Amino acid sequence: MSANHVKRNKVFISYTLQDSIIDRDLLSKVYEDISPQLDVFIDLINNDSSDKQNRVMSELRTSQYLCVLETPSTGQSVWVKKEVEEAINRHIPIYHVPLNTRSNDNEKNIVLFIKQHIIEEKKMTADNNTRITHHDSFEGLSKIQVQTRPTNAGASFNNLKNLQPSNSNTSNKK
Image 1 (cartoon, rainbow, N blue to C red):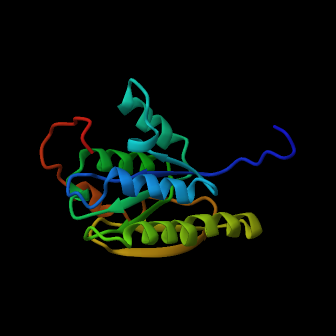
Image 2 (cartoon, helix red, strand yellow; image 1 turned 60 degrees about the horizontal axis):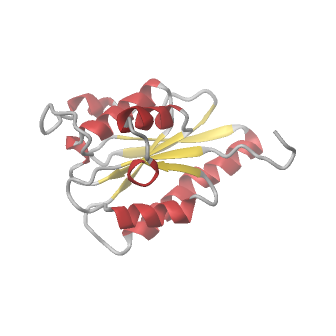
């Protein structure tokens, strides 16, 4: 690794398209806004693999953060649930951005949240070896805890087990 190369943290963006609040255009704009500062994986934008499901899990496993774009249908998404469970199992900090309606402000709100909570955390961690970990349930309950390492990303995600997919089909549809 050269002296000029700095390893960048990666954020995995989890979402569902089921309620049409999030679409490819919104995800593309978020990617363009955040990618200069963080490595970003957004399935719909970055996944050109022939084995898309395997790629999703591989990208999540190498991420330092999971950011769930929470819409009213998030709790019914089999894939969001799998991604959150994997993040909990791997102690990946989980953040969520609530998006209740389709709005021109969604891009700005997502980017602002990521910049304030993930990018600033990275700076804070580098400065004093602390980590801000955001734990949430899909019911909008949230808290931010400042902890020294290590952290348990799943400590407050108790309601996850209560989420029921709308059907048992685990197709590619997020």
